[in-house]
Image 1 (cartoon, rainbow, N blue to C red):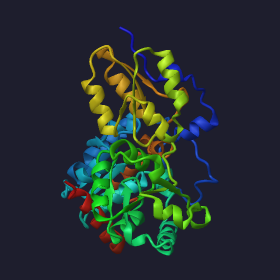
Image 2: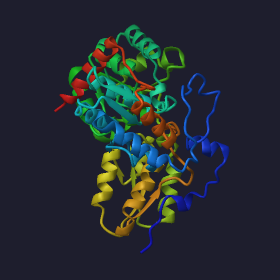
Image 3: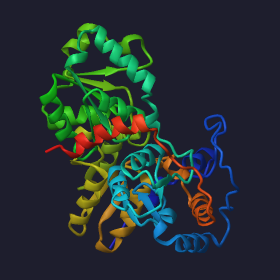
Image 4: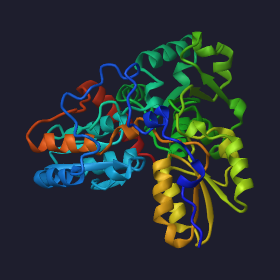
Length: 395
């Protein structure tokens, strides 16, 4: 039996940049104003695991810990449930008796949990530096300006916004206010089908790749039906004629992890591992998705590997923590599971949540001190929830 884990082909030395990607170092220039108001325990503290267990036990049913699939193993160990962003937000809403929701994920996920949970529940993000580069690529001001551009082009009344779950509460609220819906990577096709029943065009926020891949692969559109709106260019870099001709207006945003995979990655792994199945997330570039054997959400990837026959070979194009965890999980089933790319590709902001931050959060709550609470204002919450409810009502 030969099992290849993702650690073997990477051969990456722990450079300062790699440590930053792992969340073990900070970049003060990019994270100004994001500091913990308390003292974190040292990562070298040998009692961290016991401290986390003790604090969680002291809190009992008052705390509910959510762990995203991309989290480190040391954090996942203390999660009451694991899943993707929307599943975790719904899991939190299903626990109304939990006073504290500790979300081991990133900022937009904690916002979604706050929107869906009760007013008496408090959502905690162990490290406020755990953001999402994709979500940050679409601000409320930029999207409002885009809508003005669509209005001036005479197409706004035909446009239905569809926003990916990986967006800020402000963008979800904009979507709800303008008659649109939210989608996940699992139900993007259903969301787009619904949107095109409401209008002639879709403004897809903020991930261009999920929007393009769903439109072309699942809805049978052509690449020419899609245009790319760049918020950093006048009028999005598009003419009124281009906006009038388009069916899909894609926001120029992407996932910094999935966007790293290339067609060369696919070709290289096929050359190295004959008979390998290439399975990628739909946030990958269109040419990567087109070259893959299977495409699906995080949950789809997990289920596909669960159902895979013994001895099968898989190259996975998604976040490295999850790929490595799956390789270890299925090691005794002789499934060869490798990371699609040769270079390290952690979600750097997701990795900000580490055991010292989790211990600090749990111990603070156990002592009666609420830290890093994520709160969405009432008006934003109202419109964002409207968009989320439209998603929940999708057939």
